[in-house]
Length: 196
Image (cartoon, rainbow, N blue to C red; front, side, top):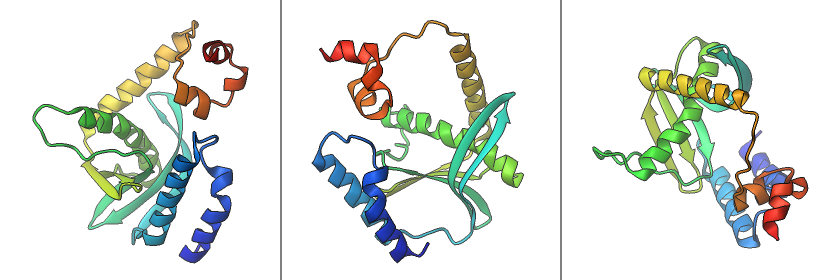
């Protein structure tokens, strides 16, 4: 799609695709404006390899499905890029990790897991992991680390094991997640009880 076509498509479709039930018009407008500004000024990678690539893959005999926003090559480096509306901060570089460093590490798990799909598709792991935090106009780049990849694979596998072994699901009532992200909050007895 050409950029001008993409802009008009975005304007026409935003209301249908935006996060359902944003809490107020100001938040809705803020996200809309940030997305529109990004589209108007975005620069696409020159050598994309994968764009919006959905695929299934296995890690430690566990099935995963993911969508890679973009993978591209630049200066002989393979880069996996994910677009985020969230306000992530680049790594602080401090000896003791900050809260924002730990938050970044949590988000990076997604790209480490998607690295398995990238490897399946290209035969290579990425050299660099990137987040394009487009609302803040921040590009965060982190080198791919095989040791962190192995740790993430173990974390994902262990998390799946814990989930599949659990048969007692206690609710985690969080207003934002329950009200704006959950598709069944209007039918959930826990959400309805806590609203009163």
